[in-house]
Structure formats: structure tokens, C-alpha cells
Length: 177
Image (cartoon, rainbow, N blue to C red):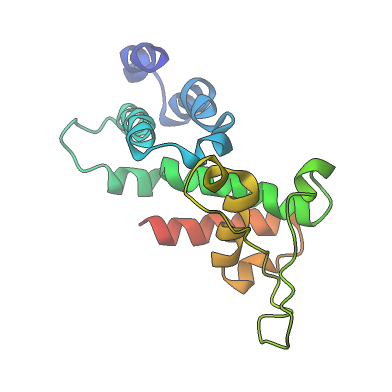
């Protein structure tokens, strides 16, 4: 709804002003509680991706049949799936460093192998065992360690939240495109 109104007045605005409007009315809604969408079906994620693609087209004045990947790259926008992973990994980093609520920190356990292995001090998290891919497989306590363990050490060992955010976005951007 808001995107249609922004598209009508887009010709009267600069790119910077249009970007502010798109961020205020569209992107903020796509990012609101998007960590809860981590277990959503790909059909649901694709619908959200179509909204993001439409917002990118309105912002850059691209035509409907132009390929969207170069547009997203030029705007430095992560796809919806990567945005969801970004939010989960940011919450994980904050939980491990005492910056998140206690209930999130209690869901994460450091991986401590019973015998001496190279992975002992690597900063991995324990991924809980699940029987089937049901609601447990979509939970934070399962998804967060899985994503965290897949990160390179240079991203995981960041000193501050701002450094972690920039390294994580760079890593996810390289994975997505």
C-alpha cells in the first residue's frame, strides 16, 4: 500500500528522500521481528522478497522485467533470507557477549568436546539434537548455533558489535551474491 503511494510521488523526490521513505514504510516492516521468520516456508519468504524487489525497483526506477540482482547490489541490500540470518546472528553475538536478555543467553551452550579436538577452543556452539524437522528445528536454540558455527572465525571473533555488524554484512553479502 505505502509502496504504491511512494511510486506515485517518486518523480518529485531525490534518491535520498525516496530512500528514506522506502526505509520508513517498507524496509522497517520487512525487518520487524524477522528473526521469527527463520523457519518459515520458502513460499512465505519469496512473497517478502517480492515486496523488497518492488521497493528496490521503485527506488531506482528500474523496469519490471529488469534483473533485480544488480539493483539489490547497487543499493547494498541483503535478500530477505540473509536479513533473517543477520538478525539471528546479531542476537547470538549479543547473547554470547552479555548484551542480550538473559533468557536468550540461557538457550546457547558452548561446544565442549569430551576429548581433545582442534575444535575445542574455536568458539563453536552446541547444536541440540532434534528428532524431526518440526518446530524445534525452527527455534532460536537450534538455528542460532547452526548459523554461528557456519561463520568464519574472523567474523565470530569481532571485538565490538559495530565491527561484528560490518563483518557479518560483508560476509552475508558475499554469500548472497
